Every structure is written in structure tokens, then in C-alpha cells.
Length: 342
Image 1 (cartoon, rainbow, N blue to C red):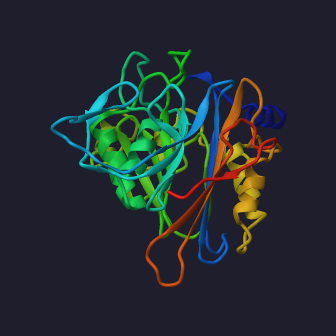
Image 2: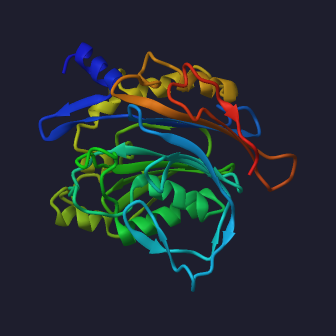
Image 3: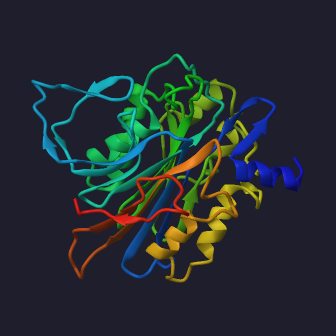
């Protein structure tokens, strides 16, 4: 692919591979910790890119103590899973036809966004399991910290798997997921391939994820059988370095290393606001950017956007979270409205 074609693929959100059916790509998720963000704050942002015209609403769900004898399960988009005794109040950008959400936060200041990724682990469109969006909602509903959310999501992933159509009117549109899971103290980049996963901890500087695997040879946590399973499936020979992205990516990892990719364009936009200047307004400007395809128009478009600011007052341990959401497509044209506190 020449430079012009690569730029076109990045901007239109379509990547082609001889072994992979062309798929619409979308969504970009960002986070900035100090020193990129202003002192004492964490800035999170996401554009949800979905099929044009798909409804996505701002929704709130209160905290609840659940009667497990009366209602032992919760119905997700395609499957029922065991309910938990306590859920926390959440604010979600929820796709209208599904249980889950593209992004959201909870009363404890945990925020999560997900991305579609395509891997060498096969997906049968007829299988029904948890969607990545289901896992976003379950993560914020069931946790007080980002590490707890990581454990919730990976445990559910290993037990129930991920799968099922990810578009209401296209049963063939399926994918695996990556996640950016953050609280005031730390964040986690979680990337998955079927039931297997790897996670990298972050707590300073700026980070973003798009629609490709980014975790290479350095990660902090992973599924227990990750390496043995990869060897069993002949994805890794057990001799060279275990490079998660190279082993599991359908596309070449060089695609996301290209300077024209949305991942690199997003990182470049964040660097323009480094040195403590990556605040709420800067994050909104990034989500409105067209040069790198961050604000998407076309058959696949940015259908909703969210920016969150996490902070603490003095020596208090309780996180104060403020969220701004569009609840509409195209952040370049619409206002980010401050949401009532949870």
C-alpha cells in the first residue's frame, strides 16, 4: 500500500488485508495523566464510531442492592450471566438496541471505553456471548477501581467469551475488543483475542488506542494460559519473544506504526497538548479533529462522544468525576454537555 492509499484507508476507516475481509474501523479512546494532563487531574476521552444513523443515548442507572434469589441473572445483549449483590451508579453512552455501552463512568470515578479489534482467533457469527460493549457496562457497574474493573472484565471474558453481531442489521459484523480502563490513580490498556488477553498498566503521560493491538513484548498481566495456548494453536513457536500484537493481529502491526494511521495521528494530537496542557478543552479539540480521521463522517460515523475529568480535592481519597457528553453524532458540530453528578 502506497502512502496515499494508506492515508485514504486511515481516513475512511477501512483497512484491507489478503487474509481479512475489509471491515469498517472506528472509535478512538484517549487518556492523559500528569505530566501531560494538568496537575491533579486525569483527562479521558472517546469518540464512538458506529454505523451511520444508529441510535446512541445518554443513560443513567442508579446503584442497586440485588436480590439474587429473585433475580439471580442479568440479561446482556445475547446471553444471561450471574448477577452480583451490588452494582454502582453509572453514566453510559448506550447503543439503543443493546445492553452494553460504548463508554461510561461510575460513582467511584472509573471510566472505560472499548475498541473493535480483529485477531487471528476465529469468530463464528452464529456464536452468542458477551459483546465488548456489555463488558464496558459490567466493568463500571461492578467495580470501585480500574484494577477491579480489569479483573471483572477478564474474569467474565474467560468464563463467557465474546461474540455475536455487533451491528443491529449486519449479523456478519463481529469483532474482538480492546479497552482503556482508568481511574485517578492508574489506568489499564487491555487487549483481547477470543478468551485470551494481555494488559499493560499506565499512570503517567498520554495514551490512546484505536482499532489495532498495541501491546507488544512488555505487559504486566495476562491470561494464565496465554503462551501455552498460542503455542498449541501454532501462533507462537516458543523461541522468539512473545509479541502479543504480532502474534494475534490479523493485519500487520506495521499498519498502526504508519504515521498516517489513526493511532499515530491521535498520539500526535495528544503530544501537541503535552506539558500539563491536555485538559478538557484540548481533549474536545482532539475528538473534533478531521485530519487524522478522529471525527469520522460517512457510512461509519462518530455517533457519540465523551470527555471525563477525574480529580481529587486536597488529601481526600474520593475522586471527583465530571463528564461531558454529546449524545449526538459529529462532535465537530455539537456541544459537549456537562452531565449531572452521579
